[in-house]
Length: 135
Image (cartoon, rainbow, N blue to C red; front, top):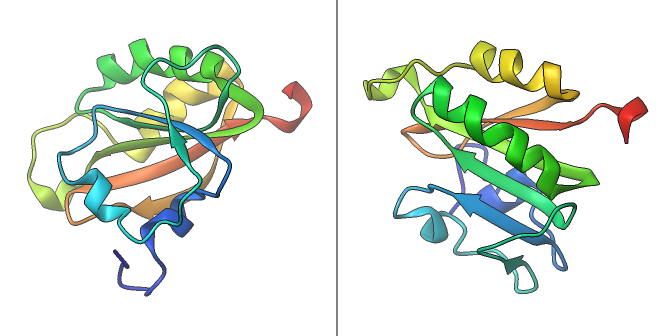
C-alpha cells in the first residue's frame, strides 16, 4: 500500500529482494501494508545473531523497547537497519513512546536515527542503524 507520498511502504522501509527480515509484534494488517512488495524478502521467525538486513519492532511501552532493542541490535548485520514503531500521539492509543524515547534507548547501543516514516494511521517509525565507526 502507498502512503500520502505515493511511495509504497516497503520502499520507505527499505525492504529489498534478498533481504533477511524479522518483524516483532506487528499489527495484524502489517503484511497487507507490504502487499505490493516484490518477492525475494525472506522473513524469519528465529533469526541468528548478525543475520538480519532489516528488523522491525513494534512497541507500546518504553520498557518494552529497552528490553528488546539490545536484542535486535545483536541480530542485525553491520550494515543492517532496525525500524522501531510506536503508536502516534494522534492515534490516541495509550503509550509512553516517542521519537525521543527511541533515541534515548538507541544512542547507548551505538545506534543512530536516520529516517522517520508513517507506517499507517496508527504507527510511526524511526529507522536506526549502527553508528558508522562501530560497524
